[in-house]
Image (cartoon, rainbow, N blue to C red; front, top):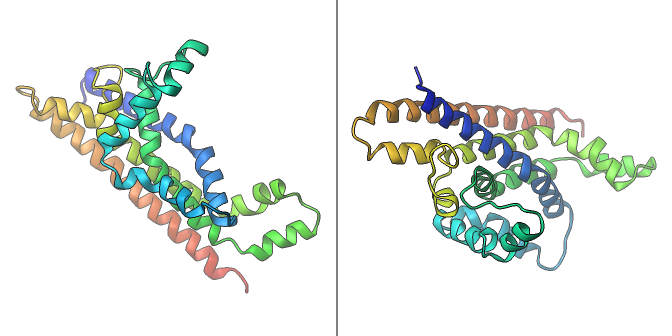
Length: 231
């Protein structure tokens, strides 16, 4: 059984992961649509920037967030003075770091799903008088929904396991920014912490495996729908 402290860590991790997905999903959908439907100068550069967190050391991403959204950062200073919003040493900052790290996974899954949508269906909707926005929300997005959900699940799992960017940006504060990965890291150096480490590790494994299985099932469902689509 989980102790009260361990349960708090799990609940905080879930809250961080959920907010990370909510924050990034609209931007991921918009970015995926632009990359899948528009040709423009700088498209390759945008695609590279979107996927940059996947190849950069997470500590570098966390440092970049600190420079941008820290109290002395370009964006962070303005938000603190104008809106009274700060991210450093806050659980919302952990969610921001997790959102940035999971963003490329979400964009990639959604982009692949949108690219699989038959353009003839979108053209038919436009011929019938639907606006581009209505075509997207009534044709493209519903058909790409399994891929969207797969991307959301992958980003959620990534947010739960995020470590490097989070600890660099918001530190490891129990009860505020200490998510599952950070708690495991701390308990490894705590005498007698091995049982708690094992419990949290098993929770992390269970969530990750569930997310991967769900994502794969949704991807297969999307592929099956494409195969059954009349040509």
